[in-house]
Length: 459
Image (tube, rainbow, N blue to C red; front, side, top):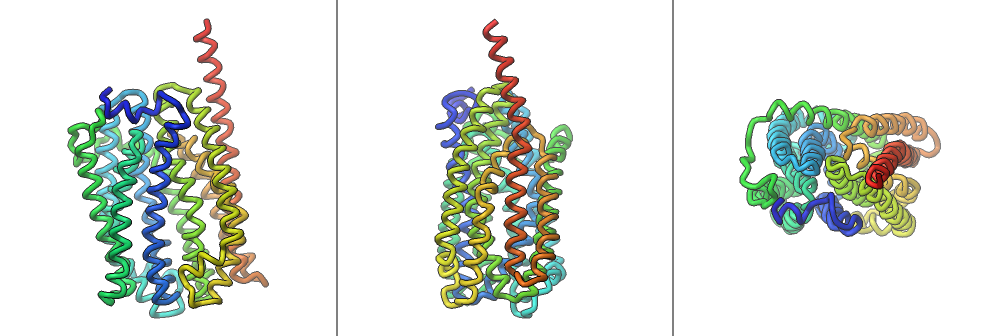
């Protein structure tokens, strides 16, 4: 293997430093993606809570777009990592090329659908304020243009992570975040574009990120990717595996977003202030979740490579380290929401005390699920590293479906919108707890395989 490849080999060397080197940039990328929304929300909050509500409604539909985006990511994340672990470089190249082609095709389909059906999609939420509804429709139509680029970005970043080089997408995304932060106030206020300006800024930065990531991939020195042709038609031999890995996650994402849309209709009945609280609260709550998801992406690559190489002892040790690290992060996230809940809402909507008060209650309720939500990523990475994506999807669909039922029941009484916040927190706690608990039998099998390997070596 070339030096460029061995530098990022996850099947050898010290486990803790290797996982940290890989996971810190992937967590950083997740935080940067969240910071895109934070930057837009910060400036839109200076317009009105209605502007925040409009962008937040579109944000839910962007989650829906992750349904199809899931295929390109899983093809790169699982296929590339397992093939690299087995030193099957043609296979890794084939999975990446197929994933990129699928990402572009599916991104064009999704973006086109949002562009054409923006009105009916926004209408589903039953927004009371016509100005908020109109801003949301315009915002969605502009953002739709960025979706093909976002799909390709995600697939390329997943391939870099799978190869052990997570620093590259982190650096590129960091530069694009800076550009987005500069463009937002210029387009929203100086150019007088309002909500539309925030959407245009995001589209520009997604295009820029896509161009730079593809250039970086083209010049990558990893033996598996060196000199490969990026754009090729999807290859049938790889498409089957990509869809097998991606379909459970796609179903999970679709159901999750559909349930969120139903819950958001319940929230909309309480007015634009409640919608703004949900939007801002979701972003703050995502801080802990996205860090966990970033670590999970790194741990998936680590488990995938070592599974392909048959290094079972390393998988077990990586799982233990991941559990300890995410437990510490879960405690920190809980304390953050307990003691600084008002600060976050004062940051975004300082002139609206009712929204701040409602938001502080939201975050106190959400503090209760943070620990379990952080362990969720560790459990998911076990399933995904093995290529077993069905089980986490079933757990997610069940608990998110329960969220809708609880939200409907609890919001109808004296709790009002707080009942919805309780429903989301309870379901998130159950999802994380079940995900981690169901991953334990797989890790136990890993431990048994390690013992068998050791016994054979001793003989």
